[in-house]
Length: 359
Image 1 (cartoon, one colour):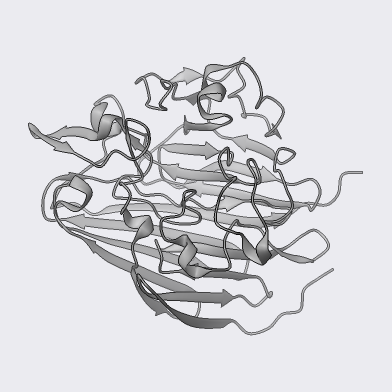
Image 2: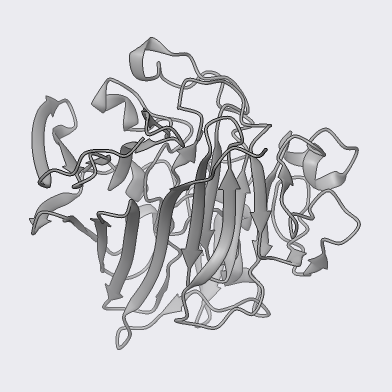
């Protein structure tokens, strides 16, 4: 069933909270598909796209209460920072100076700390009828990181159901930065239960083994012959309960894969997610060297979901394009250093499509 064409619409809702004014911006394209964004963590609140029959559904985890996105455990939909993922023992050295960060995930720093970018209210502005620009200034010493860093997250929602995210940063002192988007996807609909039947493909022949606290060893290991092999698409749940160290450490997938044929600045497909039930397909593209796949292993206990739904473990999957975890402590990894003369710029594209039902 084809969807009727209409004009684009952008709506803004403002909600007062104890943390300040929350802005929700909804962009609806000419096909009737929409994205709602929030200035809490420059986050994605909803993505409503059609299935193979043209029926619309919201395919991302989220909450009815806009304030619940502040300091939620799952980091739902948001841009974590200053350093997404983990830094071992909350410490790194830069130019001979040691920096200590807040430890908030076992012995390690995660997603920039408890008051990282994901838990801040960003400034917001509209750019035409198809784009939203979020900005914030991260001050020198915030969560232990050096340098004043200006950050931009620009989202664009196209008429062919592509959500394009550009992340930029500039600093006045040498620092480290790693930005991503932490949206959780369930292509059957956010309240449809486990995604273990979703089929995943990764354009990645190697992954980063970790210790039991999910800190990389520094090696790249081939996925062939292991449960980490998604070079050919298969269901997320096929191997998730295997007796394999990476799966035992995180109670499921919570690992970084190294993108094949990575070239700095070149955008290429890195992941495909397909839901056989609805026919919805998500294609993820980026110019980042890594992709972290997290299968929502600890979603239970999240704030109450949209429509009062209570999320459970494995109800959604996050596909987080990023630099490698703990790269500041691994000189063999692509560098995450940012100097004052440089502009950090990364791209992530989420494209929503449909496939016909297999005969």
